[in-house]
Length: 127
Image (cartoon, rainbow, N blue to C red; front, side):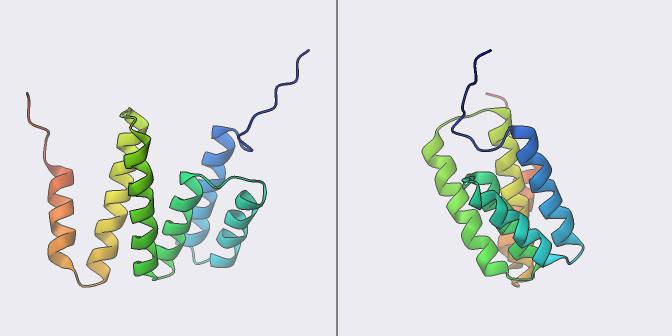
């Protein structure tokens, strides 16, 4: 039997589970538990997009909308550098845009939030 070491400290399902748990904890006001999970993911070397998104979600539920926007901007920059266009990337972009619109709305930047919401609900034009 061959033992294969991965550079990735977590398998995708493990990361998804932890990210979802962060979301649930944050949504229910258990910010310290959510923060502990994020720090644990970072401690084992997981510093990818999912951890940064978890930090943005935690900031949002902690009413720190400017910090959440800053983290979403960093995620957008990473996505531009990635260059991949797959379904998962599209889902992540939609998730970031939804969270960005919510942050902007909470900050009183309603026109910007509505513009993002309108863009998200428009059907793509056929070529």
